Amino acid sequence: MNPNITRVLLKPKEDREINQGFPWVFDNEIASVKYNAKDGTGVKTSSLAECDVDDGTVVEVCTNAGGFLGTGVINRKSKITIRIFSREHADQIMADTYAYWDKVIRNAVNIRKLNFTENDSYRLVFGEADFVPGLICERYVDDGNVYIVIQFLALACEVFRKEILKAIENACKPYAIFERSDAGVREKEGLEERSGWIGRHGKEVITIVENGIQIEVDIARGQKTGYFLDQKFNRARVAEFCRGKKVLDTFTHTGAFGLNAFKAGARDVTSVDISEDAVELVKRNIKNNGAEKVVKAVCADVFDVLKKYETEGEKFDVIILDPPAFTKKAKAIEKAYGGYKEINLRAMRILNEGGILVTCSCSHYFDENTFYDMIMHAAKDSHRRVQVLEKRGAAPDHPVLLGYPKSEYLKCAICRVL
Image 1 (cartoon, rainbow, N blue to C red):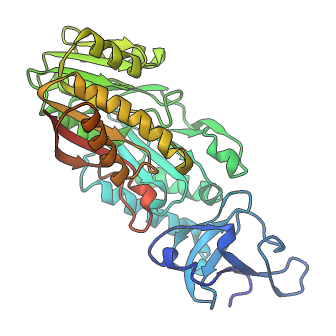
Image 2 (image 1 turned 120 degrees about the vertical axis):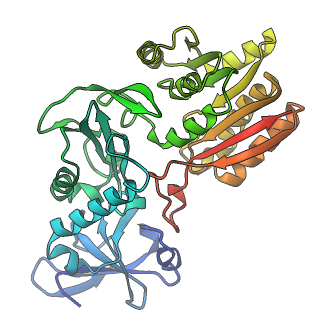
């Protein structure tokens, strides 16, 4: 044992999920910690609560018998006590941390090149699924200039901040980098929120091109990192069902689904969002794409709009439901189920015979089985028959890490309603 490397031993049988690829260790799974005492008395073994190890320390996670499982970063302020980022030994990584993170970032870049071009905007790093716990990094292209929008959401990536930023700069040659580490989750990690330019300043509102559509992205004030890139290929696929159709695009955010429908030849598109700022952005996107004669933006609560259309007998050929996560906690699944079911059954009632319902959920806790069970019961209660034509997920810039179910969060069902 290298005495300079802290080793965390798990309780018996707590290594099963880690061996399957799960990258988190919780405090109640830890049996003991072996570490080099700061007082110079050598290697000590103690409980997690009593150990003299600083948060942010790189540690090795081991089975109860001492078998190596992976290397991570410890943070006792967080419910996720250790986030594992590598299956290499800690001393190999710490010998040259920049070389290690340069390799990780370049691997992420190379994977994206399989599905995206230099002019595409895409998610460059998807946290644990790309082996950089807590890091979200978007690569946007505005008129040939690469903008990086980055979030350091956990101590596990914050401690390697300099190395990660240098690796991204070398791999991507960005025009500018904007940090959006302004999410509440940082408080749970014992970190202050942070937002602003890193180095060179650029435009806070940029324009990207997705599937031939111009989309304004507010990287400084937009939701999360400004835009939801995960639906890119779903938007293109859904557009194929919209030619000559009357389309309702709900929870529209930037109007992207509706504008893809317009580009595909939809005859009438209504895009609805409850946020006034979002609707103003949608209106600008409508104008920028010359879609004023086909697409209109409506500021309203989607639940209320669906009820109104049902009462008035309004009908559509295609309806898109892409709501924000109705639950971010396992305990709230039942309440979320009711919300998802209501919008789905009301949408089914206002679809023309044989109409297309595109329904989504981005909540990890609302898993696939629960999602399709909800669609089934919404069909039953709306007295409709539903055929699921396609089951889709996030774009390939959001890889799924086996053993880490949270990385497979997005469900997108294309349904025919009879």
